[in-house]
Length: 191
Image 1: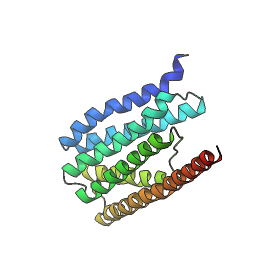
Image 2: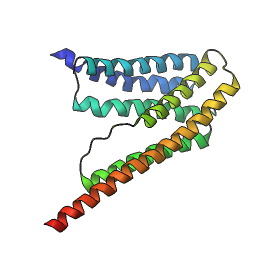
Image 3: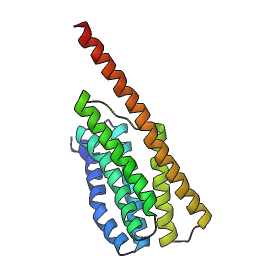
Image 4: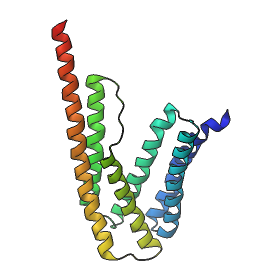
């Protein structure tokens, strides 16, 4: 059934939208960039809804969807940082957290094998705050200027939730890693 692949097709379209979005951001055409960002965000909700509602889940989609989401957010933040709309410090913290998580996941996989990693509620909240910050900046630049205090509060909230989420993942997965290593050493000594 061809409809089964619709969520994957929508995800691929979201990846394709990164090209016009990047161009519009580089050219500082923020109003149009806002529209593309909204369409990409809507597509993320739509493909997730379809995949869950009709059980149109695939391994391809499970891998590509979070990568597309992360690419959308990181590329948008990187260009806004380059344009001087987001501080390099904040972007550095966001990038460092993502590198830390990916490196940790790779190390865990390398040492212990495959695993199922699901984002924590804290991580989902952090992602929501990051998206809200980017969206608010785009609204402020391309549509209507938002209060400086609101944007500054979002910057601080993004900063702290990003650091907190990185620490949370380190503690959570570090504990799982130590627990699994202890279990394997116990099994080896029993043999």
